Amino acid sequence: MKYFQPEIETMPLDQLRALQSERLVKQVRHVYDHVPCYRQRMDEMGLKPEDIRGIEDLHKLPFLSKADLREQYPDGLLAVPKSECVRIHSTSGTTGKRVVAFYTQHDVDLWDNCCARAIVAAGGSCDDVVQVCYGYGLFTGGLGLHGGSHRVGALTLPMSSGNTDRQIQFMMDLGATFLCCTPSYAAYLGESLKERGYAPSDNHLKAGIFGAEPWTEEMRRDIEKNLGIKAYDIYGLTELSGPGVAFECAEQHGMHINEDHFIAEIIDPDTGEVLPEGTKGELVFTSLTKEAFPLLRYRTRDICVLSREKCSCGRTFIRMAKPMGRSDDMLIIRGVNVFPSQIETVLIKLGYPPNYEIEVDRINNSDTLDVRVEFPPEQFDDSLGNIAKKEKELASAMRDMLGIGPKIHLVPPKTIARSEGKAVRVIDKRKLI
Image (cartoon, rainbow, N blue to C red; front, side, top):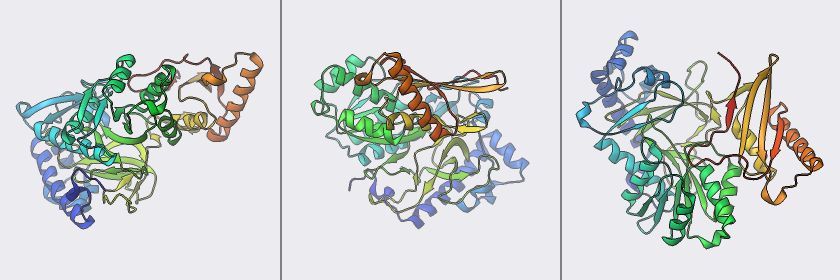
């Protein structure tokens, strides 16, 4: 079994918890001394750094939200002098102020290690050619996997996103063995290779590491079939560092959280109560080793489950399930909770590509739900009778999954715009403020 840092990734649980406690105590003192926002909040609660003696006291600390990060824009949460920082990254949010995360060189080095662990866990080594198609720049995806690939010693193709013709040319000519991008772009590359007459066996790819947006198990199988690879999930947030907070191993059954750097909790999103292992709730992270931008009890809004069940790979890190959606992205339509991933599951099970758009509106005080879906190229038939029949079948399957019936609009192949970054699936036209 391959590990990048075996002594850490397979550390006995009692040693791991002792390491977390030691680092948490140090981190709380660091933020209290250097971040006025944290100090003020702790003082208001009557909480001092010495009250945190280990991970058993974590629950005493206040939560931090994305709204807090925006309120402290641009550098209100910076915990070191700006002269000690070597890089920033920023979220791709479309509302309010951006979140700007700062990094010291030490932060970058540890982040590279986390991404290297992910690549090795997926079977990567110095003999591989890693094609990084995540966006570079302020987005963390490109430079994150780039740094991990370098740390492993692999040949790195820093392609960034877009320019699919060039992506395919380099993939084939340079013999890329690893593909790193969003799952929606991986699906698009699979389509594009097929259109150009390539079979999955024609490329040299053996694995892909896909993240930055939600994707289903059905989409995973579709990508694996079309590219002839094993597709691995990776999880991260710009606020914490970027991709590499958690990663899948060969078992492909949940993502191992790098617990020497991050403590994970699951809470009730409404009450903030810490929930027991195995319970579905909101994921909360505390960064233990980040110097420049350390976050304590950061609410991710991702809904998932944690499990300490033994993994066949030998890693002792706790695993998080693939997020089931986000508490802030969940749509409430006619009183029903709807996640885009539920719609995607239905589409792929019935043989439709994962290219769709969800439009929600409110007409005459009633919510409407419209879903635009592409015909599979091999099934396209523009006869009105066939379209109506297929739309009715899809609407019925969606009703069974969601509990409400959407209006389905089947459109010709290639009608819905492809994404080279994060796919935008939902258009909510309701005025809910």
